[in-house]
Length: 141
Ligand SMILES: [Zn+2]
Image (cartoon, rainbow, N blue to C red; front, top):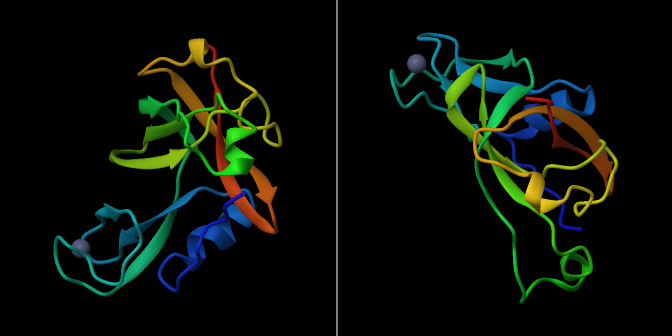
């Protein structure tokens, strides 16, 4: 599997994920949330930031079902999904991920026919090759 490339700005995201917390970077001066993480606030240009705890709830904003050609390990799991999740606490922030049946379940563990734009999801964490990554579980709507 491909694992995240962790840079200095994004490192706290992954450290919190390893503790089971979904946190988004926020400006400590004006309070605006921003993603992906970066040093400077695009709204007020402050370099002071903090990491705000999210509820872990969101909605599927969009999704795709990738088709070949795929990397071999992904081809073996097709059909799977890749979703954009709009966070309930930060509607302008959307995270890329996968909807799965359980935190450690394979990428193809949810029937693509069950996915709907707007469907409520909640975050769950699983370890992939030593990195804890967020995954998404469908909520009953
Ligand atoms: Zn700011």
